[in-house]
Length: 117
Image (cartoon, rainbow, N blue to C red; front, side, top):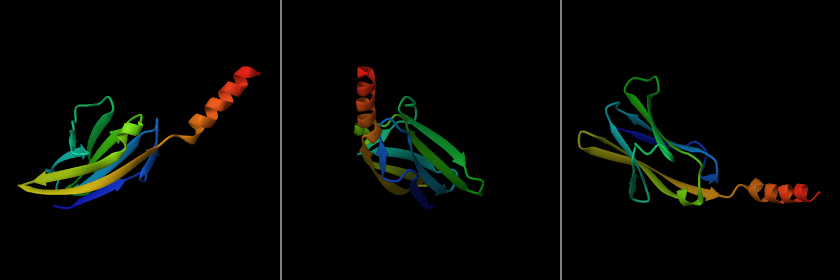
């Protein structure tokens, strides 16, 4: 069993955006789960976190994608994807940094200025 991890958006994301954390596993019958700072992210929570399971067209490969919607500062932290099959466990980790979108501050000033004219 082999696990590849990839944070497709890099390590820094901005508030209000969406990020996808992706794990690719050899072995389609692998059980995957994501953990953030030692807390399991439940697959059923589709309000903020959403799991996507998909094959990538190759034989015996499974891709699991964790989509985090409407990023907040609280989403910063360490994410780990675990893959379990036949008693073997492997993992890939991601460190996610969250910053405030620069436009948020500039846009607030612009809106305030436009309201004054």
